Every structure is written in C-alpha cells, then in structure tokens.
Amino acid sequence: MRHYELLTVLKPVLTEEENKAKIEFLKEILEKNGAEIAAFQEMGTRRLAYPIEKLERGYYSVFYFTAPATAILEVERLIRITEEFIRFMSVKYENQKELRHWNKQVEKFAPKVQAEAPAVEAKVEAVEEVVAVEETVVAETVVTETKE
Image (spheres, rainbow, N blue to C red):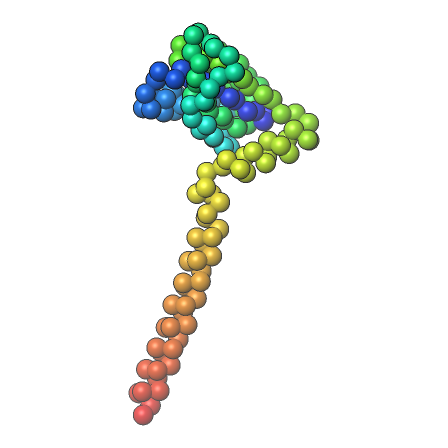
C-alpha cells in the first residue's frame, strides 16, 4: 500500500449538491479500488491561477489515502473522462520525509470524531466514577440507618 494525496478541482457552476455527489462518487471509486481514505479536506471555491476552459474559479478538495499502485491508475482514468473535473493532481509519498508530511496532513484533516473519542471516553469514565462514589455513599447511609 502506498500513500497518496489527490487534489481535485470541480467546475464552479455546479450546485452544492452536485459537488457533494461528485465527491461521494470519487470516494466510492477510491474505496472500490482498495483505497483507505485517511483524511479529506474540502477547500471550497477558490480563484484559479489562470483561466481553464474560460473558468476563473474552481471547487477544490483534497483526499489523503493509502492504496495499491493499480488503484490510482483507475481513479485517474475515471477523473479524466468525467466532465465536471477540470483539473486534478495526484502525489505519491515515498521517502520518510514525505511520509512524515503526509501523516501531519492526515492528523490535521482527519475527522474530528476520532480525535474527540478519547476525550468523550475520559468524561464517561469520570461520570462512572462519580456514580460509583454516590452509590457507595447511598449504600453506607442505608446500612447506618438500618443499624440505628
């Protein structure tokens, strides 16, 4: 499995729903070809460095994923034949320095649900401890009241 970054630029004339549908289409293609998406960054509509097909803006998104070498060929082929994508760039990360950068980007743009999970677990454990202490106090109170 190799590490990749895939930047895509969609036509700005698409609606928000169409943009989301094309991004989901791309995610499905990646996953069908054995890719594991580590992070995704939606950059939104931005100005292009130069006009492409008489368009001056584009909708940018970036995928960080690991995949077998054959998967990227199929993904690039399907992007090329899809009209809505005006540009794309895939980057393969190979050496240690590049892989460290890839890992930093993944940490930065990974879904926040994964990052919040340890904090939520810590809060749940704290609540469970408080409940256990309260149950012990209630049990001790009941025992002392029954003795009297």
